[in-house]
Length: 541
Image 1 (cartoon, rainbow, N blue to C red):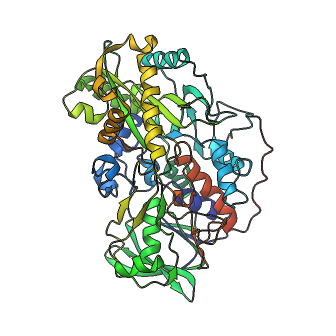
Image 2 (cartoon, rainbow, N blue to C red):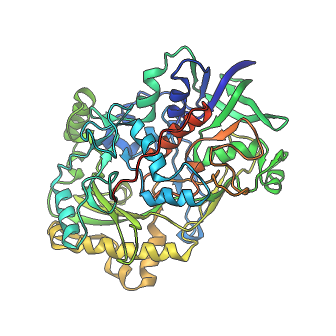
Image 3 (cartoon, one colour):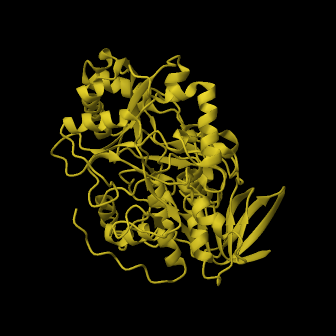
């Protein structure tokens, strides 16, 4: 049996960061395990192809929810990256930390050390943002490149003008002093290529003598001995072997795979485990529960002006854009078509924004497949802090068999109301003359879909979809029911932590990739016994 100080399971948004930081001083021997491989396919490098990367089956876990009562019984596809970099290798590359109030909520869950002032230094440690030197909210020289969108398409300007005309403020930095407002987003793009946690944190350090990276390594279970995690059982190259961790095992599989691995290892709700054929070893009923995800809808319009992404559908133009991006890191394919938007309140009395809205100068793939091959644009939004809660539960002792995924979308009435209000707000911006001058006709929703509250709710149920931000299934909390304590340690087991988005007690009001990296940065200091970075003094909001 091979021995390591630390075993990190999952080389995704958290695992690559954690493996880098645990091995950087050369003292600890670290093993990073990844079920997928390393892909050099251009689809993962060229930002414009992000929509294709989401659903590339060979590098995807290809998950699917159970039928959702709140979505007219539909099943939603839940892509998760199965490769080095994990979901950071297939996502939309938007760099967003969330609202400072999100971390205040974590602190209120009995989690000292997780306030905004506590976590900001870890965001800054990761970041390389050369456009904002000396900014107290940003870092320069970290591994992760962060660059602001160029916003060159004229439709972006029209959208932002329409939003300002509707009374919404401008915002130059959603990761700065204030989140509310409209503007251009930050992205993880370096020299025209995707910046994932693999390219930023892992590939530059893979030659460290104290870091081993195993790809094609499917972890079957965590090995528990007398209440301690002593290693993992892993399938690799057709052989099942055990690997020992002398210090700790860290699960970084994400909001689906981490609770699944705890459950197949005997850690979870005893009744559920027995029903799935697993012997309960540690009673932890909340493993897999508290599932949260962002749910969004698209308002789509035909465009009078031939300036949308549809112009790149012509084969010669598509080929030219692809080659310019791949060979020279330039041209339209080096950006993600999600560059403008922001965080807004659907009702003025709210203290903080409750929706995230984004403009796309093109139509989504579903609309195009449905025969809407034309110039068009869309407005997408999602609810930031849904109250609906679901669960992940295994259906077999086999870790390679997908668990049941039940987010229970729109099971909370407050979520239904927020989505309804969001449709009306997005519609206002879409109808504002600054943007409506490009409108050649509505595609969806049609006027009949907006005739009443009930009609809007029905339209949302028919078309809403995941924004790919599942969290919360191994929540940390100060109460004894929480799966993890404030240092991400699994209650009832020693030597075992969960370090990924499943640890979030509540979903961040924004994209979850950057906060997941922050969790891994902070976890590395905890695991190495180092003092946390000093909290940053409160900054003006």
